[in-house]
Image (tube, rainbow, N blue to C red; front, side):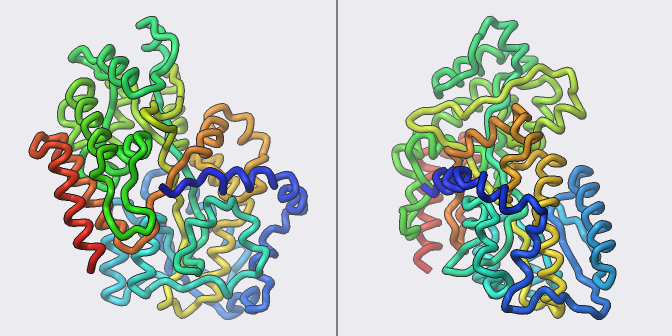
Length: 428
């Protein structure tokens, strides 16, 4: 189990010093002005093709503004921006790799990075920054960019997850505290399930979001996806089977019918539409509540625990592809994209956790109770394994979860079949 944990908070201890070092706002200088000479991004006019994963209005408005500001500072570099739906991003990157039509730069899910590196299309970044540059980032976020001894991207997003619940519904039922254990979660969810509304909004559509929703239950029961050396599947252990049995019971007893087709967005919408009492989401969700259900009385708490506290920690990256003909300009844009100012703007705009160490001490971030919660539970955040085969493993697990929810296989049968397929994949 790969925890963000100590990495995150060992850096937090150093925040005061980091913040002091950055009080002059000159954080960008640490990355560019190095021996590689990359500070002098092409003086000639250059056009960069950039993909951004994500298409909702929050993402578009932020990134459109960022590019406008970048153009003001770098009039010789024109960024042509394309927004790619998250659920199409991986396939578009793979197809474009095969067709040699990759953009110069793209944001990507951190869980795709090792796969893209194995395809030999990602530019290693180690020669683009000086020795002190990584220290400007939260260790846990920076370390997700590391694979086989090199840096393959810069952190561009950093999140954990928690259990959102309807505080007003809890009060109406006389429930004083949100559930803290699996048993309490199931019983509380059943309390709110009466045919018109349901206790828990789950994700079971068989996509990567299905694995994302189930993973904290696996980790929370002491299980894991792979052995420590990442050579064999162990998600079909007793802990894994129990976790899927619980998830299946939660679906059957307290989730809306048809949840096997629900994505994360569907689950969020059910919560916003007064249809479910609880669901698990990340720190961006309060923005949606503020816009779509401003009067909602809600709370956030940790994932209910079986054996140990655990939640999912994920990081998005911005990567350069080695087919780019404008690598200096591409690095200039990547550094601007992830600089201290833009990290803080993005965190406040989208509700993500800052990946720049100095921004963890921002007063507005610290005084936001929702953000403070996610900063606190980041101590228990666990990340997916970093290996090229992860997308296929992710899909095998998602299929197993959906098969168990549908009743097509028992949880044990579904996980055993998935583990057999994963082990064959890892042997090749």
